[in-house]
Length: 297
Image 1: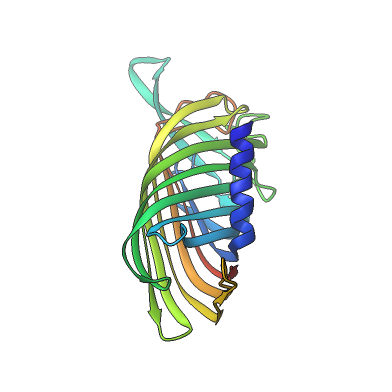
Image 2: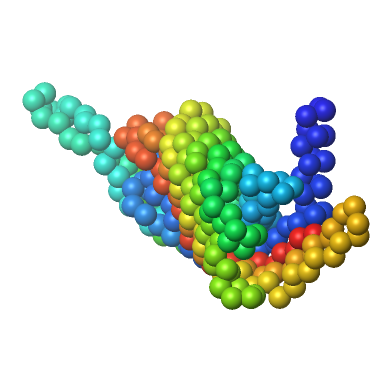
């Protein structure tokens, strides 16, 4: 309890002294993991973020940063199909013959929502000013999204092979933690503008659950992220009051962020009928352009 209060107080103090709010929109892609989702599908996605790009601790080269993002996608559609489950059955009239088992899968829709948060503690290897630096640090993060899946309302299949009362609406909950190196830089471009960027490659581990599908598995994988943009800072002022100095900053950002999550050996049977099919890698990514407004004191 004391640790939670301390962390909350530290975050609140950070938000009062500095912060940036971003709105982003772009494309969300999903591939693998779900029954029948063997190829990449995409849809539109929106994201809302609270960000601290880089903040030095006092006057040292040590810094921290964080990014807390809420994602919300449109419906992602998977077409009606017939799936080879990879199993075989003996033919009753021919003991030496067999046939491959198939199952008809109705058109499905998926919607991705949830929270992604991460923080970095690092050290500036190069630092000439608050607008010119290169730093390296350790990233700790958490992803807690869910994916709603159900038969699409535009489904027109009358195939009797579709399992009756199967493929009902369900929720797949993902909870993963990650750790890895993170690198960041900023380069001034004249008096008001600067170019910035960050890159991360991390290991992640956690769980994927879906009660309807009977899925409760531990997963491992990787997390990759690239964030680049232009920062416009029209207000930058330092005022000394003797024993302390106020340094108000007001800025806007325009940038691009690519985030990729990958989980190894996943099989989520959204039919709810216990269909056996091969595990594969589940891959998700969000490619977004964003606009942000920030301040610091």
